[in-house]
Amino acid sequence: MRTTLAALFLICISALPAFAAAKAKGDASPPVVIAHCKGADDCEVKWGRALVWANTHLNYPVARATRNLIQTSGPARGSTYPSVSIARTRNPDGSYSFVLQAFCANIFGCRPELPELRADFAGFVDAGFEAP
Image 1 (cartoon, rainbow, N blue to C red):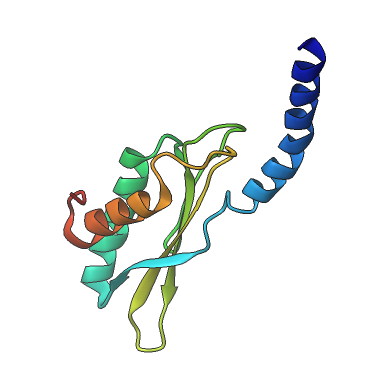
Image 2 (image 1 turned 180 degrees about the horizontal axis):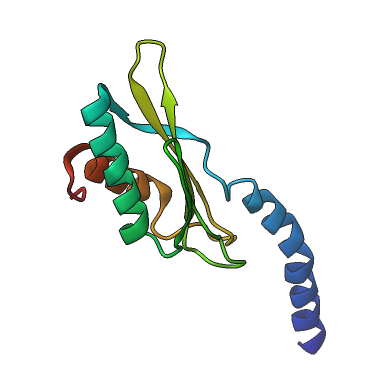
């Protein structure tokens, strides 16, 4: 019995690096266009909301905020809390897209999960309120 438990323990331990490596590939979400704005007033309002959202809805503080980029600090090793990068990119028609990318450093993923995080961001930026 003792030998069986030791063997099972060794198998589990030896599988962890492979599991962690596979999961690490999913730690960073692909950049996703979440919101759009058109015109100076609309873009300033929505970019302001993006900054407010980053300051109030995330567990990491905003480390960098410019006219076209918002980045939080983090993620801390092993944390399920996402850190984010939000870029405002100009489209050929003169409108802008807000591109959100999230990162977490936990093999079990982010909390909140990334689709929920994206929906919350979109609802807040587009309408100034949180998604249901």
